[in-house]
Image 1 (tube, one colour):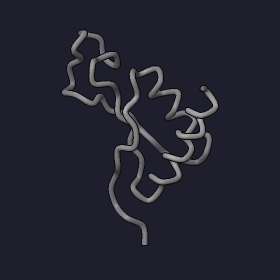
Image 2 (image 1 turned 60 degrees about the vertical axis):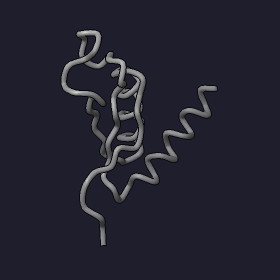
Image 3 (image 1 turned 180 degrees about the horizontal axis):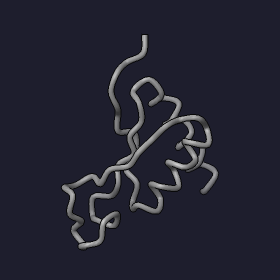
Image 4 (image 1 turned 120 degrees about the vertical axis):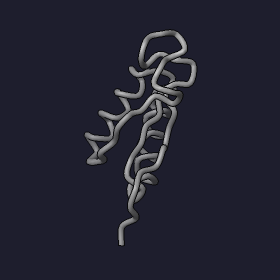
Length: 78
């Protein structure tokens, strides 16, 4: 039985990094979405570039797979 709901799996530095990771997850068959980590207002006044970053969320039942993909992406960029 699949678990219901969503889980935050990653906090990206900014909206650019977050959207790149979301696209990579989608290419691997995992639906994901972003949400600013703080309130809806960025500390710098520009959405997606606040001091708290941007969270990436996925369905609970694919969270482990999504984390593995993000880890692989991070390793390849070192």
